[in-house]
Length: 439
Image (cartoon, rainbow, N blue to C red; front, side, top):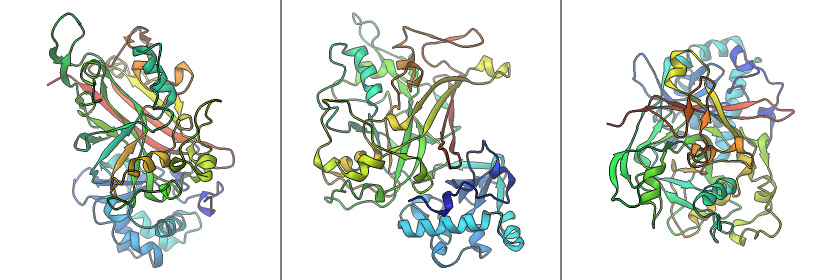
């Protein structure tokens, strides 16, 4: 629900939170987990506001939270969101958000400002950690444009398999190799069978790629054997983040048959440090993807009026590339693509409901990702596999370099933000990673 915390006229006494281009105005307040970079001690739950991270537990010690908001603040010394925030009910989360807005608003009194100020850390002085203990990770395949493009490369006469428009396709990923934004990515090795007339070789991946995705965290889980209805699905979702599902395409092409992704995907998945809550995203809800005439409607267990009317999110997603030569020349990163989450064929509520529909027990802190978010236009394709059409159409960079797939030294930078007339722009920060040579 849109409420007073989304008021575009709200201002903060923290000036950087009022900048027009900030990702973190007072209307956002995403969560993160961090330490002060100089000490690497006292891992804490934080909230981003402007150019600062607010230490939540330290604010609790200063008696800045009481009543309902106290319940979350007092648990913020558990060093992760799944213990302190994610599993709390929506009413407590809403009360905590309202109190944050009160103490950060320009209407806050001087004593409050003094106590908050001592617990603000400049964002460039912190080290971020994974926001939760991610027990399980599931990656979906929910962009029909991405699925159609990829299918056209390998099955030009039958791009989409018969199940695609009936079921949110997904696979179980590897939680242990999920890393926080900024972590360097070592080029993986794997079996490559580029020559169909010769046995495979075990070599460093040649066709290394990224995938622009959006992730969402499970808040409250469900018991084994108890499905989650589509009406209740979003009560189990805490918030969203950016995800880069790094992919070794040459390894994938050889190994994925018949069981799907394996080593081509599980060597690393990067996520952004900030988790934007469902409440902060309320002004940017849109109807679910409008299916083409003749497409089947979702089966009953995946269908509801609320999901149809407001199941989507209007989130602009951008991918930038900065090569090693570009960094050396102080050249700005190059925009590769711009897509939008509202183009997903399936909503995140439908993804979660389907995941639990067989009685699978989801747990607090579990991460799910949408799959590559691509649009219909060529410049809205969310990975190099699509942008270069499997390497046959290389990208020309401003400095004269070309790219079919990622090379050592390349940095991929992902951004996400929401804009709507009558509301403040909010963002997700960045999700980035530099490619290192194979070990």
